[in-house]
Amino acid sequence: MAGEGARPTTVAEHYANHLASVYEWMAGGSETAFAQGAADVAAHLGRTRHAVDLGAGFGMHAIPLARAGARVLALDESELLLASLARNGAGLPVQALHADLTGFARHLSERPDLILCMGDTLTHLASPEQVRQLLHDAAQALAPGGTFLATFRDYRRLPEREARFIPVRSDDHRILSCFLEELPAHVRVHDVLHERAGDGWHMRVSSYLKLRLDPDHVSTWIADAGLRGAIGPGPRGMLRLHASAPG
Image (cartoon, rainbow, N blue to C red):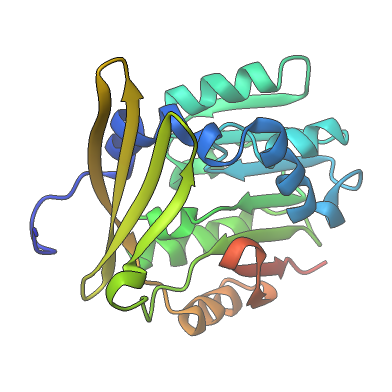
């Protein structure tokens, strides 16, 4: 296996060439995902005027917010997922933008009262410094009393031995699993996709790096950014970061 110093596949490359085409299926289908997304942001439905969704994908959280009346700016680096979001959000107040989420502030025309960074998106960033800077930028961008909401996985201690082979989803025509490889500052996630074609099963494998964020460090960065917040248990085995701007 390649070491951490080898040139890894970027997150954008991994999604463009491997994961984006099956991402809605992986999430159980769009409406199942929208129901989960609505539960994730239930406290903000009907109360949010303007939201920014960083790493919005096909709209798991942006669509429920827009259905509840919010105007949503949705950023992602996957053109395929954004095309799905545009289809899912037809007629809704969602602006889908192909952009690097770390530069989200330059696309704002007003201060949002909610900024989201859901799924495991924070660990997709290039470095802990980028995460720290994103929290700072969110604090500066939020309207007074606004909320920054994120989820991320705790990779400080990985599963051991065979538990590092994780089934994700399967049906009669497709099987997705992943393998977690421990590196000093990252976890290398190997996504293994089997798909049935006319002449049998075909396998495709791609891997990319995720940060091994320390929740204690993230809590410090929240406070340093001027936000009041906490990190606790979240949905689907992730941690949930909930922080508020003064005002």
